Image (cartoon, rainbow, N blue to C red; front, side, top):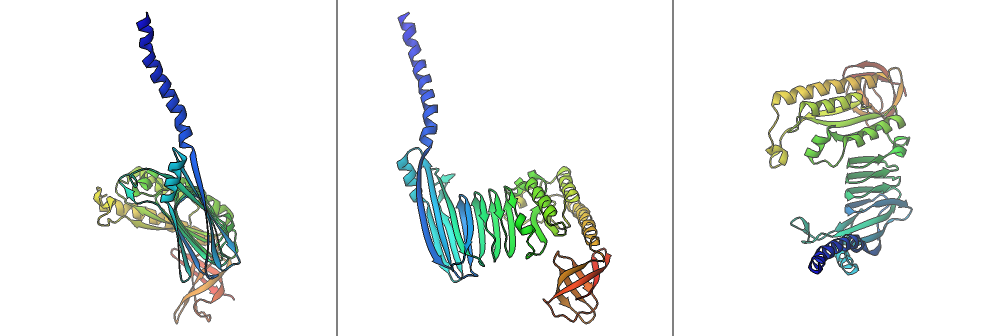
Length: 371
């Protein structure tokens, strides 16, 4: 009997050790070290901020000062406070200035194998940056949320694994955002031409993942629906690819259906063509006939949507700019991206005019200058 009781102790001790390990592990993982960073560098009032390789949230604000003011919070988590401090020291903030450009980059240890410097580290850097009101900003490769105040210059945002809130800009290019994209104030801003173009590529989530694009078609659909409500007369366009290796008939139908039901007013459709030394080029390719047929079908649908969009403005007068001239006629481009052919035009190129839309044809819009 005594031996039987004692034989139970190893099992009890092992079970207790497992329980302790399970309870203790989260506690150890919660050890956190924070370090603040602050720096200001001069920047002309029409200069540019370039921000890249960020693992953390970013907030871009504006000020009347001719400078870039940076406040950052580095947060490191590890099994011990000492280890958290050690890991934090491995991550640096690099700020350089050259002419009208200020570059801010988070530098992590060089990757070795599948982890950083041989060991996985958990270090994020959250940024709060003030730039001149008329400056531009380019933000690239971010794992976190991005918030940008209304800018007087252009805003370029690419490769964000998180949400993007862009309050306004003189021009905006946003590509590869995996979270929600908020552009409500831009869509309703009278200073910005009502023309939005998205690099969608495809509407099948499976194909998007195969392409290596960290985005879901659903986020684009919600964005387009929002833009359509906020700016109902805006041109909404997208780049669409057909024939990517592995694209099935069901994948193509997803893309065709997306284009058909979406508020897109036009689309640039192009067939996939292999590029040497890329993963997609090594995969089995679709027959040329299939790719051509799919591209043709999508272009027909895009042309129909474009025709219907232009028909909405028949008899209307729109603001436009002269983009080309010849002895016989001129071409003007409306704020919502409708090219209009007009007979004769006294205004020089790049001059703003007012055009009346008189005739809508497949692939062509005709009008006359009225002011």
